[in-house]
Image (tube, rainbow, N blue to C red; front, side):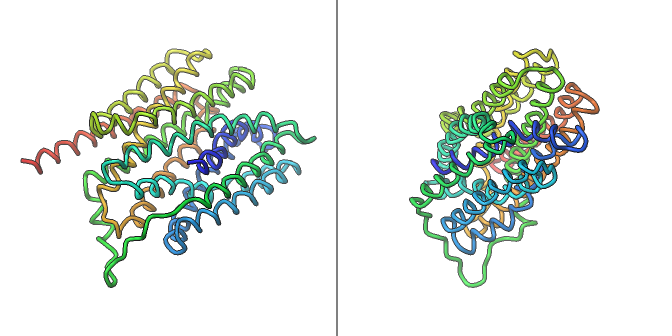
Length: 381
């Protein structure tokens, strides 16, 4: 949890200042959000290799290697900004994908350390780390902005310190004993597992949650600071509030799942997203941005935590690395597409069109959850 707090700071840093660095260095303003999108693209690209490495060398050693990779990359990012190279900076942000993909596996490590009935609570507790990251990331980016003669170099040097501290904390992690497989049996075929309604709901809820959240979040700093001229401090607080809202519900999401069931928490997440879009349609004053982004964070939390808790119900222990890797590959690939397109869409079509494009995804998710519930009733009958 402590390591996650420190490593998780990279996301808020890139989201907060990536677009501003992009505007300053990019050859065209429509590429301004490209660094943010590259971070998510990198996560998708590195997901399967990271999962394979973790399966080969073990979670603890794999986490250590990923953190060392991240420390080296913070220096590369600082250098790219120092020489004012937009494409080198994009490459450095892409390479953070190795560390982020590794950190995404923390939630599965947490779930495997507790009984199945407590898996949702374990994920919720781990995600509380995001609250610390929500403050650490933007603050280190804001404070470090002027540490050196070139703006934002210090923001990434500050990350070097945070990642180094996370390396100390991860030394205390002890992975649960690995499940031994008999002979060459490696579980069911992927094609068989993905046909299960519970798997479809888990992967779709997580994917839509991440995609809609990233799509709107990536474009918000540009819409606020560039298009509507809100100052940097106001924009920072909206992003910080959004990230806090992503993780603050983790104090009770696991409890809500146990009390009201997975289905109802998923419905609550979709409702939060719908209200977020409604507020965004109403206006683009500061209060509209702030409230919409807070609801966006809450909706993401409900969908992501519930989807993560559902996923282990679809696979056997010997299938875990295969399914966890496949789930995260799909989820972050779709999130990458959403982030890549956000900058172009906000520049070409505006805020309202962006929000409208999210509605079909929410409706599809709603229908799939209803289909899953009907399949359960048929099985019980």
